[in-house]
Picture 1 (cartoon, rainbow, N blue to C red):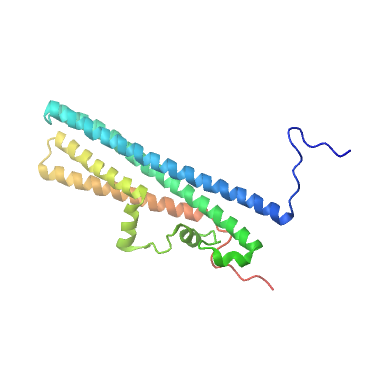
Picture 2 (tube, one colour):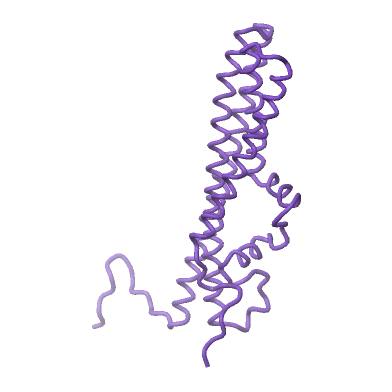
Length: 236
């Protein structure tokens, strides 16, 4: 009589070495794809939450303005409401930046797995439009960002098109409006109110941009590639 299989099911047949490794790699590949999907879902839900809070704040302030006709009560309520909206906006930008870093990490992992695939079957490399390198040039190629400008106005234009950049611009507008309301409540001259609005917008936008760049550079420095684009030649 043969040996009994494990309780609850039959014993699974052992796969050949190469097939077993490919099965493990494929399982990890699908796991990273699922993680990327969850990351995108959270990013979109965060942006939707911020825009919902902003829209609700605008509607609430419009109703208060009709009742108070832009009096002191409206100004005080607007300052409180816009402070909450600004907090939600800044928190959303920070979280989106973290999620972007997570997404880059999942792509790095998939590039490493692709490297393992091509190590076993190098003849298939001609059919891949993505890359097997897990450094940032390789990640950019996989994501389709290899032609993204890295300096000048092109980089700024690309930055405001991203989810963190777009939300940062809206949050900066809210910050400018908040500063203008505070200056107006303190009976500041109109020129000071306008300057405060412009300064609040620029200061908030620059602070979020500088923080985002520094955060990305720290993330990039903390991740060392195992399969760089320019790999050293193998010893003979």
